Amino acid sequence: MALYEHVFLARQDLSQAQVDQLAATATEIVEANEGKVTKTETWGLKNLAYKIDRNRKAHFVLLNIEGPGAVVAELERQTRINEDVIRYLTIRVDEHESGPSVMMRKNERDRKRREAREERD
Image (cartoon, rainbow, N blue to C red; front, side):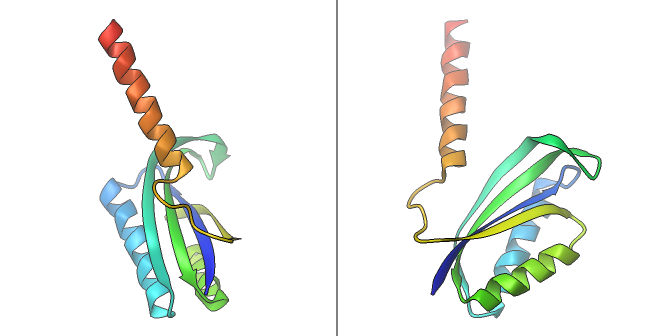
């Protein structure tokens, strides 16, 4: 089975529950096509480097996928149709990261720095 990382950006005006529903829908698409989602991470609402369709921010979501290439083709087809997704990227990887992704480790590190700064003040 091939390994993939699929990241999509959802519109900024969606609630967290709607973003979670988008991730669940993507998982259902993968599982319906004989694939498996091994990890789902929601990175939260982040600023974009430039406006995309009048959006300055977007919800970022990562899915680690195991499955044949047909799974990715169908997932990308469904994602392209969805109006709530403004961008997506799927890449093939040799192996998935164990533990949290780099973005999640960065969020944790930033949170600890903020707490330490607040304690000093």
